[in-house]
Image 1 (cartoon, rainbow, N blue to C red):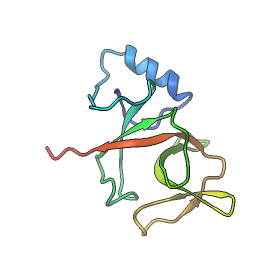
Image 2: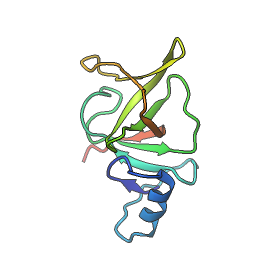
Image 3: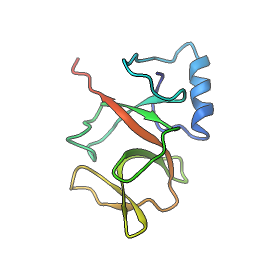
Image 4: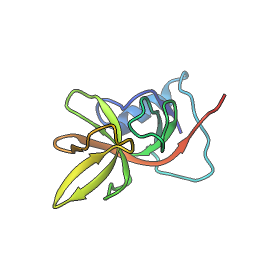
Length: 124
């Protein structure tokens, strides 16, 4: 699956197709088959530590339906993205970090880019 450096702006499926056409795109092979539009993103920061540390790669599937307690990638109206756990409480959706130093936020008008299917952590 291709590695995209950050949460893609615009339609994720179109970003994946553009990445596949580029000769500069890096790929990571995985042993399980995921959706045709799945892609890797590099995690930055520590809001999801210890689950994901800075530099971890996560495989995101935009075709997988998000549900309560899934880890998702979301994008706001400024095309800024984040990785958080999706939780539903009383009919409202929230984005919950693993690191309790960070606040829980409402999903609000953020767009769910996809569901995190797996993570890869490099040591060297």
